[in-house]
Length: 359
Image (cartoon, rainbow, N blue to C red):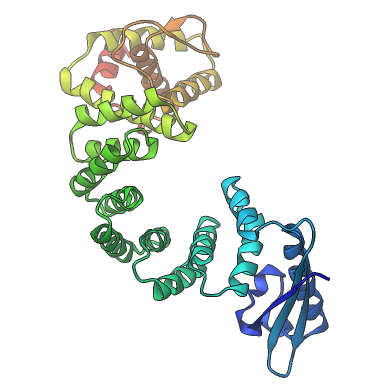
């Protein structure tokens, strides 16, 4: 005969959202049915058999369970789900483990982080606060709680927790990376550069930290150093959205430098003159489609410092340099959205191109 285990919890400690009920449902037949089904299903996932006994008199749920021959440690099961990114599947199991062992800090940490990653920040803060009450020096718990605060827009609270975490562990990468992001949200790029430089030194292949450092350097006014970080991120590769962001920021920097390097660009004027001639044989819809296609390419980064014609378009034949495409895009937007900010100022060259054509 298998050994039977049990634990109990008050009605108020059970998260009704796990079974789709409201406070007014507590004690009803539906409440009993769904709570029983919940625990039976959760224990079944790691090879257990469970039954919940609900006592309305003292408002408690007693869960009695036993192991089957297929039993595996439920923490191992949860870890595999979390590692696989299956947060919604892991969440009920984490709540079950928490209800079974309310003082288990490992479970509290994983539960708080999971709730935060699923966007339930207020609930995550309650859980992580409880974790830090049990273990005040839990650095990863501090970082997780700080992240929940930051995601709620409570930047001062997040910053304070991250500094406390770094006081305990000065080289905690996660605290540094999140502090850098928090400082950027507060428009303090110079402070963020110091913090994110330490993060990148600790983890030189972390794309998020590298791109974050690049953004901080760019906002602090050091375009050359920022561009170095964006190039590093692109060469390392990684999540597509981060690489696209790095490429986009490189294009913005190049646009700024292009205007700073010369008051007037004859090559841009000639590209625009040719574009305006081409537009005469195109419909307004075709011009608009061309502008949007180039703008989309620009989001992924256009190298306007390389004169090689290495880009192609679906809307026009031929090969084009990055600067040629940017010039055409500027001229195209002027045809249907003259006040649109396209990220670069070619107004002088455009005016000159119009003058050459007698417009």
